[in-house]
Length: 301
Ligand code: MG
Image (cartoon, rainbow, N blue to C red):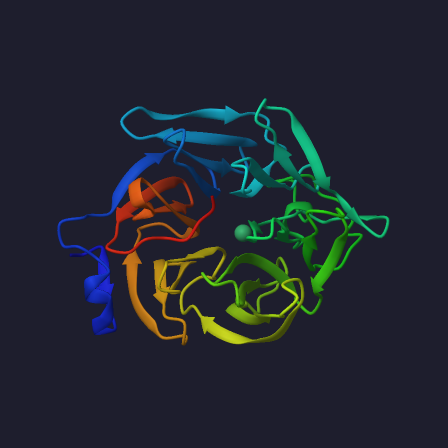
């Protein structure tokens, strides 16, 4: 199979010879933030420079879900199934209610506006964790160019008190993030500040404290050799499936590269979906791709 590169023999059972890489849709500018809605049988994803969220339905095709999208980027769902979105244009994190109205969850910290929330996950306790790099305010391409008011932090929004806390404050630019299946670990991508020629390509791993709301550590977990680790999700075995410049890299919990899904465009983000969450969806520059795997993903709800 040309679409797959097996680096560690363990990876052989993860992929299937009769399951090719599929290009599902194309013609976008820069896509990110895929999120699966099994109940609606659709995938939502952001076409950021075109300021819209797209909806893909198997056998039907792609249509516009929301336009303008406030240059939304990363998405996830909470435990009530509601869409949680990072918006560059309005520099906030929002929740789309079941009736379609949009609730602002957070847009500032200690009186200063976020830069451009990028990626978001919801923990089993309902807390919302998100990153706030500056990419959306550095140009007019993926948002509105503006002064940066806030360092680039990782935040946690408490589900009961609505209190916002900085959980990690030592990043150049945090980007994608996800928890391990048992939530004892938090993986966070570190990408470089915009226009910095010293490209960061690493994923760092943090230990989640017994309180479930603090983290420690932050050692290097994995460094991609092509492009950067923009976004990732875990499978049920705890492997991290991360975006890279040459496709998707599957990395074991001990940081070993097991294999690659080779994609002809730079991949930004991934998510598991489809029946049994055994289909890996990949947003890749101008196109949406998928491949069926012999593994099941972790993704709420
Ligand atoms: Mg990102």
